[in-house]
Length: 146
Image (cartoon, rainbow, N blue to C red; front, side, top):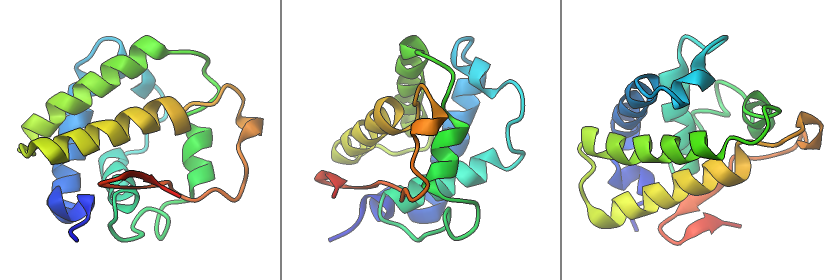
């Protein structure tokens, strides 16, 4: 069976989606706040590699950039921001259109993944709560893989 990563266009599809999402959030007055400061210059490529790995593709993020603990620590410790999260998810849904991801089933799975990751794994109140041995959560057509 084709993975979500493959259905989304593989590495090129992930790069198109990451680029479209980044452009959308940078234009959003609320979500762009998260990108003020020390954003990696290759953020789009990192994001595409991370999503690829999470969605059934190669280990392009952990093989090159870092591990899940690094990702979660980088995004944590900033308190509640449910409005920003909600808007980030809305920008993601729009970015899927920009990236020409039109299949309804694929869009739903990608939306569910992004919403889950945004509210569940990305933002902890305290970075000390993040274990050192985390792996990138894997998502399939059936949701979170355990």
